[in-house]
Image (cartoon, rainbow, N blue to C red; front, side, top):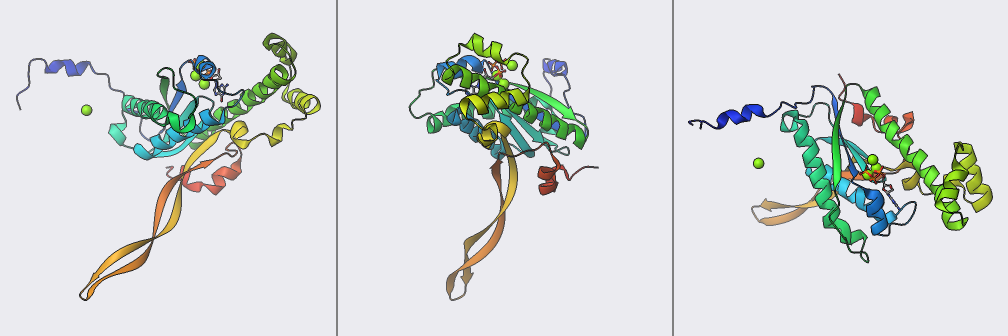
Length: 267
Ligand code: DGT
Ligand code: MG
Ligand code: MG
Ligand code: MG
Ligand code: MG
């Protein structure tokens, strides 16, 4: 096919191929969700509807896009980990990032009413995205540990902060003052002695965030078999992979021992 004289402009496109043999992580984060949460009356510090909607969107991303091994989400963010061997869109970073973010954002709007039946969506929410490459399994595990540790630190702080403000009658400034310089143990103690809250009994989704992994499920399906004397229904066993939500620790060894397939293709 003859090329037009305009064709040369294609050379201006930058090469953004992700390095081979690296885990490709796409993290997205809600734009200005401080305001978005206020305007849509999210409950503080955690809104189950909002967190479950985030999880639903992440599930849509995992089901619609290729090669995602594991995803982790908390607050207004989600990280998606693509197989280190993935050759989806020839490993172009912009394709990974834009497909993840747009699939997630449209899902957020599409599924909104399933979670917020009494709260209209007031304006179109946006999400930012970034791509990060991790060359080793340890780097990837440390990345996911970093995000889960962030979840823990923020959630502990927010749980005490809002207990002081909503139940303790402190202003936001006073609550902030009260927590300045406190350690984890101090925060646990305030929760327990002043509000009778045992932090360890708070819901796991709040404390650990959400992990999405593929799980094989056995199912029995009926298959029609054609015979010379007519057809007959026969039960057949098959295995199917589905996305499972977990709210568990991913910093320690146990999770990785239970899910060896996630890091398996390392060489
Ligand atoms: P950004 O990401 O720089 O555009 O700005 P923000 O405002 O999204 O800041 P970020 O991502 O650091 O913090 C997330 C905000 O989202 C934080 O202000 C609290 C809010 N948020 C997330 N989940 C919940 C929730 O379940 N309940 C409430 N009340 N707020 C939430
Ligand atoms: Mg931010
Ligand atoms: Mg945000
Ligand atoms: Mg955030
Ligand atoms: Mg096209």
